[in-house]
Image (cartoon, rainbow, N blue to C red; front, top):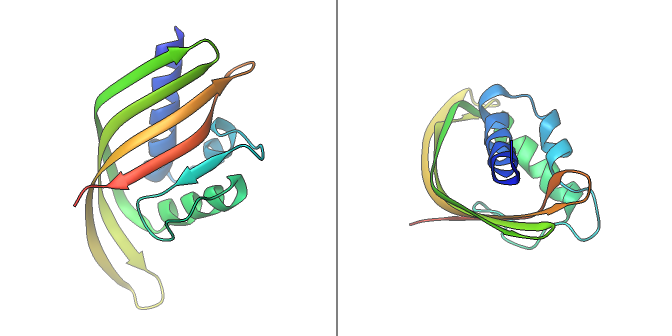
Length: 133
């Protein structure tokens, strides 16, 4: 596989964590470094560091049952050891409230931009997801 394929596989691994509930790959594909940052499409909307991002991603993915996603219009731009990936993603599922045993259907269309760097292998260094209204 080439760099473009490797990078698109990382994006798939990211969203597949929601489908499989295997959250370990989230830590492996993102750079645990003070320079990591993220913005999410659900509150809180502030800029987050690696640890906070990982905790919120894990919490979100385990809270959604029957999760599925579809990535469209993906674009990968390579710059030496840096890559910018832009895409649209539709995510659906059931948000489960374990305390009240109720669920709420979720369907969300978002724009995504992931920035990756390559040291020995590609890692996500910035995540920006923004929900379309």
